[in-house]
Length: 388
Image (tube, rainbow, N blue to C red; front, side):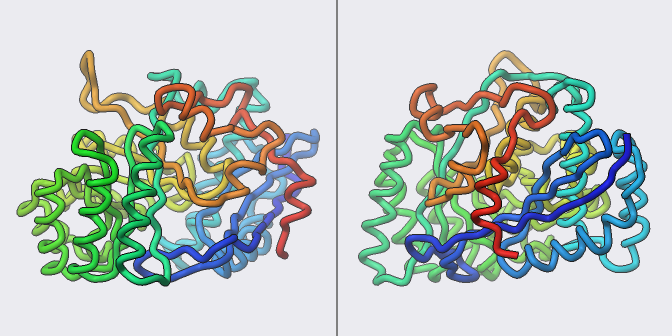
């Protein structure tokens, strides 16, 4: 079997309302799917992290740079293909968009491997440690509205997430310490004292400001503080971890085993958040997971994208060893964006039905059955929403 074609599908639609986080507001949702075709008529699917114009740039990397490197290769030679791509692109970027593009291709090759061998992805990795995966939901995005309205909305949305059945929730901050203090206090009020909530700053704070809001989070018993400062600022992360009770989480902006080796050796994270659709795909994610567990650092994957990304992560989390082991280990969770997302709900021929599963099954979701990722995108849906 040989690879004959690699296709990027960049899809998008206008959101019913603008959403925001600490770095920007956006009114359009996009996703970048990768399809690898073979001479035997079998296709594998992957996804690249990166929205909007980043997706369009990554499309060019996938189709014009990576595809010529791998056409004619056996799709089962995933490790060989990974290193060929990385070595040829090493001079042009060991992080960022080249790795995002490579990730989508690599994931598609794993999907192909599962279809060729008749095995689900989690079996290819080594088997399932859990049949169902706990899910945390987030909303509480920033909007261009007055602070009082945002505070009231955050409290209501947080309560709704808990009522929907999710095992925990996550919110955004980024309005400044005083305003963010009101937002996090509202979320704690909305979910109650006995429910986990997490706070994502998207690296908007200085170390001093992060310490100030972090002490508020300590008092509120927040579960983790995500990307509090710039991802390059390992010294700042270390200061926060040493001075705050709240767990420090991060890593979604790190790439490859080499980047993660430095991050983990710095000993700055309580919770590692690798992004499989960005860091180099499943081939590289498995190495990063081993590195994290070698450092006894818990892993809770970062997840952002379509139902393809969600499906990949359901398999990865199902196959993740507990760390540390025991009769009642701390379970990894699937991150689920609960805002308006047609690519979560409508992309697949057979939808994951995530929200309904969470409501029916105490906040957990089943791992997709069938070979590879266990899901198939709806080609007609893709054609309808293709933007390039």
